[in-house]
Image (cartoon, rainbow, N blue to C red; front, side, top):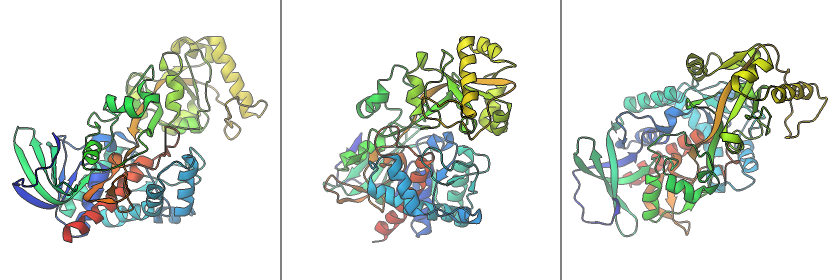
Length: 469
């Protein structure tokens, strides 16, 4: 299994463009190829497309969109690029960073206007986690499932041939890396071989491949409380094919972490309430980080605490920010939200020392008044202190999505080590190197989907051009 150099391989049928993986990147690539006039076969291993897109909150960051302009937000590719490079301390692949900064806004506009994807600006993330302005585009429900469903609907309407339950397990190529086709393993045991003029790999990252995580992300893969929250199909298969075909890798230690995964439920806790004044304490009842410094690196901050556990503490005012969101409603229905009238009563419920939690909350109140300085550098003065009835959610940190992958050019063509492109191989989504630089702290919120749809669109257009040549 993998890559076969059988140049005389016979195929059952031929399609100009084959896309492997029906997440946001693959669906966007298929849409772009169809818009360019190419026939497209989109192959998905699972019986129902889901993956990282559906598991996300459905946000893509993009600059200079019509949606932003309609709301009076001034933003552009230069500001976005500067934010990317600042967040990654200059370690982001400059070609990919520039490509995403320049094209993400147009991609959002294209998806809205041509394919009726219902993007809108939902929340105010300006000034948080590296975004200097609000550029968070999401769908009305704030769920990846709605975004994924909208993209599938658009692909069907555009005439994309989507085949599910079709696992690509072999890629056929010439000695120079020119892809000739793929083999499909059906769930019923059937096998088909499909020839193609261009192949787009959008099979996601490698978060579910523990061997690859330990190799490329040792800071996380060897953590004492290693947790992965992502699709089990993210096994790095597409990345490995690209390497076998001669592709180079970039930023393989980069990943998106998340420090607010409800434990043991495996449900995302929406971070809006923390951004607006809620806090996170460990099992000792003490704060241990600047909760708003880095939403991705907060995963490691929590995993370093006793038992790898934290408690988000919030009041009714912060609860109101999220109580209508589907994730919070589900957590509330499961009994995950602990509620008490006093800090001592809450401490008893969550089994942390009452005196420590009381001191922590007293300190936070003084921080909001500017009487003392946060030892972790967080500014509390922009929001009122926690007051009245208190709530708590038990959380942990997790690896959500790897951000390293195959190096690509501005047209999403996979590059060799010498910087030249492979003849007809393209990559996007988690299969391609993203804009997160190195490590965990370079991730900009919504960068994953931004890169997915942007490189997906470019890959589809490029693939259509190669097929027509």
